[in-house]
Image (cartoon, rainbow, N blue to C red; front, side, top):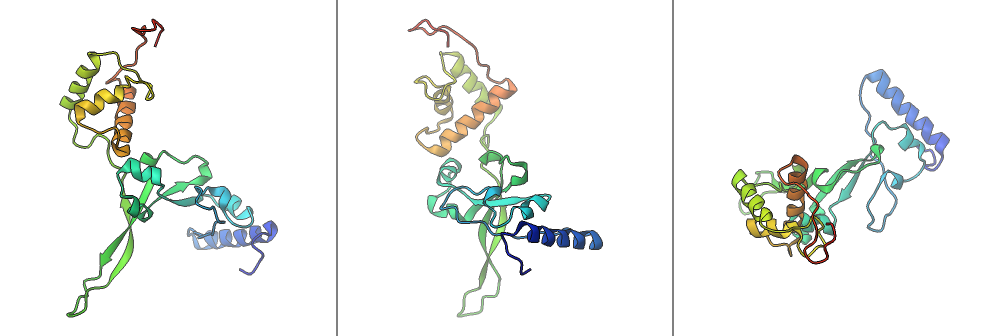
Length: 214
């Protein structure tokens, strides 16, 4: 189209034309749209460039964000490689899921199998699916039992800032390093699940030193 991108009335007419094409041809229409410069900040639906009428007319709006340095650390991804990973958020719902539940993709290099001496094969970049690391990978019911026994033998706290944070007991049993962001994130994910499904239970007791309820 040749209409001004900031003209809501004109952009609304463009959107109606697209909707008309979808109706007549019984197809879906996907529009690839630009965003304004964010200076590295996370993108949302509000960062769409131009008139808001286009976003208002769309049934579903997805936004692509590169993996952040914090997400890379938690996922155990080499910081130098994090730009190859990105997530797709459905921003029409206005709520992005946690990193571990987001819809992730990564760019991989795929050879074309056309190697001819002395020339190497060509390769192309391809988008592939990627899953957030499973916090429970390699764990068994016996590991949980060991964690439960360790916790039952002391006064541990749910508060991650506490000196006796229960995550330290989990890390010790499972030989995880809490100084590593990926291991710490994994411990937090395990605790969240175990508390939710009743494998661990939070109770209130008197602090041995302050005699206050914790």
